[in-house]
Image 1 (tube, protein in one colour):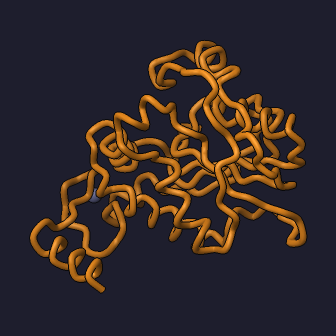
Image 2 (cartoon, helix red, strand yellow):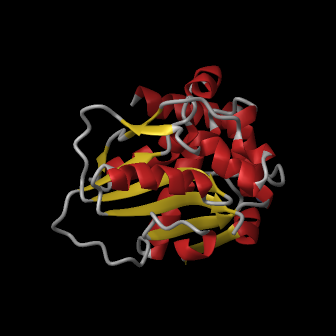
Image 3 (cartoon, helix red, strand yellow):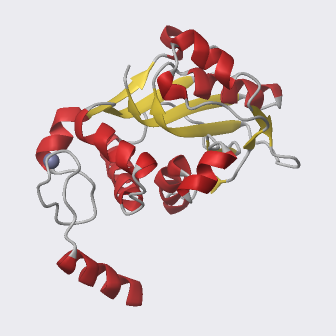
Amino acid sequence: MLSTLLSLLSDLFYPHTCPGCGEGVPGPLALCDRCRDGVYHPRPFHPGSLGCPHLDGLFFLFDYAGAIQEALHKAKFEKREDLLPRLAKEWQEGVAREGRFRWQLPADVALSVTAIPTDPARRKKRGYDVPEEIFRPWAQKNGYRWEPLLQRVRPSRPQFSLSPTERKENIQGCFGLVPGAALPDIVLLCDDICTTGATLEEAAKVLKQGGVKKVYGLALASSN
Ligand SMILES: [Zn+2]
C-alpha cells in the first residue's frame, strides 16, 4: 500500500520518460509505443546458426538497437536502477503476448529458471544484477523455480569490447555450478543481451556437464 502510494507520488513528480525519445511513458513499461515498435522482434532462434551446440533453443524479444539498447545501457552503466522493473515488465508483457516461446516444454519434468551471473566486481560496483532483476519477477509470477545454479569462478573482461573469438576465450572456464545446487532436467537460462551467444553457450555447457538434459537460452535483446 505504502509502496503503491510512493510509486504514484514518484510518477507524479518524476514522470518516466522513454529512453529512446524522451517522451513521457504513462504506466509501468520502459519504452513508448513508437520506440518499442521500432525494436520489438520476438523470435525463436536456432542455436546452431550461432555455433552453440549445448543450447537446445534460443528466444529473443527485441532487436538489440534503438530504445532498448539505450535502456539497457542506462541500466548497466548509468546507475538507472529505476529502469529495471520497467524492463522486467517489457519482458513479462512481451512473453505473455507471444504465448511463451513456442517450444514444447514437457509439463512433468523439473524446470528451473536461472540467470547468467554477473561478474562479482561489476555486480558490486552496480549494486544489482541486471539479468536477475529483469527475469526473476517473471519466473516467480509464473510459478517457475528461480534459483542460482551458476557462479563465476574466475573474472572476465566485459564482452562488448571484444571480437567474437576473444569473447569465446574471455568467457571460457568462467562459470561453475553453485555447490550443492540440485540440477533440474530443464533450465531456462536468461541474459539481458545475446550477441555472439558465447556467454549462454559456455553457461549451457557447464549445466549440461552437470547433468541438465535441456538448456534454453532467453535474452531480452539480441543483435542476431
Ligand atoms: Zn520513445
